[in-house]
Amino acid sequence: MRFLIGILFVVLPLLSYAADPGSMGETDGVFRVFLNNVSSSITAIQSAGSPSGDFVNALYLALVILRLGWVVAKWAFGSVAVEEVLYTIILILVVSSMMASYNFLTSAMHDWSTSFAGSIQKGMIGTSDPYFALEFIYDVVQNIKQEDAGLLDSVSSALRFAVMASTIQLLSIMSFFVTAWATWGYALAKLVGWMLVPLLLLPATAQWFNKWVGFFVGFLFYEILGRANIAMVLMLITSFFNLSLTVRPSRPIILNGDALSDFTGLLAMLFVSILALASTGKFAVAFGGAVDGMGTLNGAVKKTAKFAAGRIMK
Image 1 (cartoon, rainbow, N blue to C red):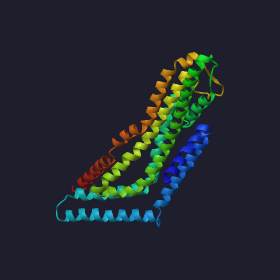
Image 2: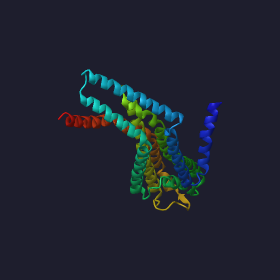
Image 3: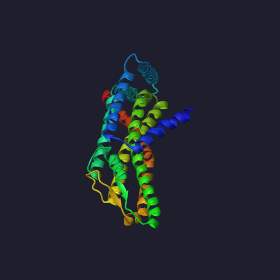
Image 4: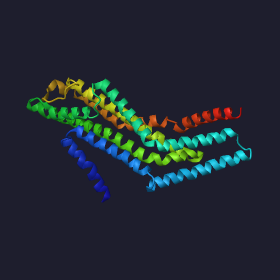
């Protein structure tokens, strides 16, 4: 029963969008409100007195005591140098700063990825509006008309026309979900990540945070790659129908027999576009997996500790 309800929640909005997507600008407004609500939730989660805030703060304090106590004890017995003690103290300060500025840092990174994606899109299609391509493709589908043909040609032409229009409509729907999924994934990563920051204090748990960094960065690249793919889809469609990228179509686009004769080539390119949109997640995972947040952080902290230890021991 729950599965059927879940299917309805997915299929009904999809059919509604296919019938009439409405204004994508309104959708963008909803997403902006959604992201603001996520940021507010992070603030509430981090606030003193909240169950999650108390839990994370208690976890942080426990790990600080465990890590610092262990290192100081080893230093007292001559097992480690003073550099290791300084490294631990600096790491604790860095983790504390990351927890305090987490909301700001993650929002800044998301703003960067959105701006970068917008600059790429603007260079390709002349606008950074994330929903321009979606509205444009939908308008193309709504305005495509088939030229009257003879009785013998009409069945074949009608079939090719229906397949072409359906494929373009599928591209439009996929483009919408790529854009929506980028926003949703970022919000999910942001909500989860703050609770993993204290895990940086122990070598045994630091890799969990490192995996989250790859997950988070993957969604940042997902938006960039998704917007670039959607812009390429729009360029493909406008090139085939000889449309201007600067003006959304508002008049009928008449397809005659000559245009439909190029059906196979267009359909092949449309399927390539579908595969590209479907593979955006894999490309983003590859980018995110290449990020070694823990290695970079450790390297910086160790260099700082080594420098400080050299100054102290002089």
